[in-house]
Image (cartoon, one colour):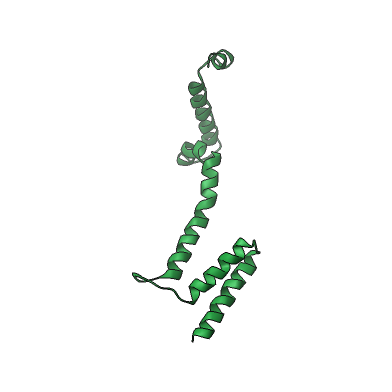
Length: 116
């Protein structure tokens, strides 16, 4: 800490605050809206970027599960569950996206055709 203060003339937390204020001023001067400038340092963090990249996948998975296994308030297992299982198997095998979708469609249609 002492070496940092000797090099930069201020403690690390003061330097970080100063850097954030300078960055916000630069963003505001270039026309960025104040709300965006206020959270810019948060959005640029690597952990936030990773979470933001995973959030749509998690939401899509939750929606798919809800649409596949729920009918009203009851749990429903039908041909869609088999199709979802086939898609999961294709994903585990690292199949291309179109193959995953195709497997799900074919298995779901096959189970429906066999089941009536």
